[in-house]
Image 1 (tube, rainbow, N blue to C red):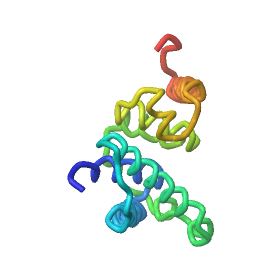
Image 2 (cartoon, rainbow, N blue to C red):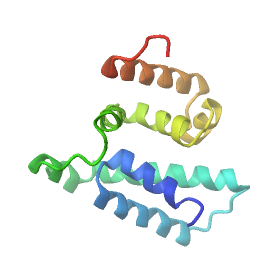
Image 3 (cartoon, rainbow, N blue to C red):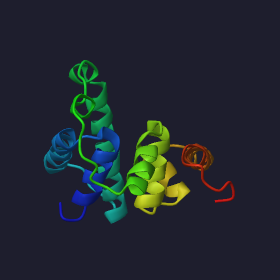
Length: 150
């Protein structure tokens, strides 16, 4: 748990944008790990398993009947700004990306995976991963007004 807790928690927060739901999925992922009989080839294989299970658990929660029939608390009340405006603006831009872009951006920039590794984890062609990264960067540039050469 010490090895993967931070990564799982960050993945949950990126996908669910909600601390309470993130904690629920976090517990679910580690419960699945404890109850699973999976045999891992190495540490990277185990890490990929955690990423895959976390992403699937987040998607399951987002598709659940309860989730599709509720309104997030953040929409009902005005929460105080906790991060500096620039940081919060960039974070919101990343979180506003469609899920397929958020996944590759997170894995590449936050976890340091290469496109071929991301392809293996997400079960996507490496060229698809490169395309998703390019499209995500383009969307972020448009939204944030960044340099076209960056």
